[in-house]
Image (cartoon, rainbow, N blue to C red):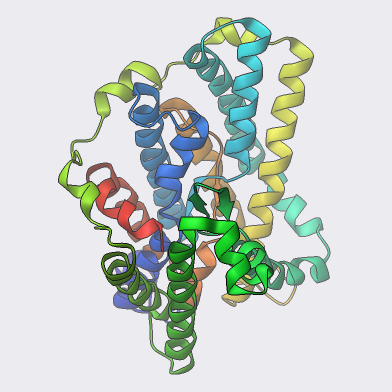
Length: 386
């Protein structure tokens, strides 16, 4: 491990790196179910859903293995949020434009992702993407890290843990709970979902307080431990307050990876004939759009988290940037071949960095856990609501 990841040189240990990988995994595990939900229109259990689920785990793992062994950086990758929603919109529009089925349109759209990945592979090998990073002013690069933190805070407080009830939804913490100003108003607005919202709020702030307290005391893995505290509180609250069994889904869960569905629907299932029906101008526009979004998404995350971890030099440049950029290019090609949208570096990598992750062992740990989730997805699912 020492020879492979240079742990002493980076001031870390195997234990710290594994904890950091676990922490990052816990913060981004939601993508394992959310990505196939978004790409298939929440058609849970269908062959396409199962195929995208497997593709999400496999493509993410491949990208993280490249990040671990080629770049030796603690950054983790998966199909990007925003990019997957845009991909779903593109698929729906292809259905309307061509009259093809959703699955056939999905397979046509995968060709766009394949082209994007190949372009990024070429740009990464030729160091063009690295030159773009270096061309960004230092002040802008240094401002990315706090901006990422503010964005995560906005997501956590503003649009996390939506509650649904007979009165509608989703209801969110800041807008609908604290924004209601009084408990009676919140109860009227949320109806039967009010108790669940209260449990979410208590879980959120207890978990946050635990993370801050443990981090203040210098405890390694403070984020992971805080999330475990929040999870246990949520499970207990589900029993005591909501009268629900948070483990009920495990009784009917299947732990067999749906490899057959992936082979039939998404694995190298490129619909080139359907792709050509989209039209030349539309194809070019879509490829450029995906490339631009992914380019700056990855640059922002890499520079921001690297800056926070002290991995940049005095000029704000990160060593092995080329290899790190190559990881998401390889991941995107793997995603297209297995059946998912663009793979990019996740901003949640910052949680692993905060837990002490400094080398590729963090990314390797997270990648192994993503592969393991092809077997234990039902177990990972019970953590997401927290």
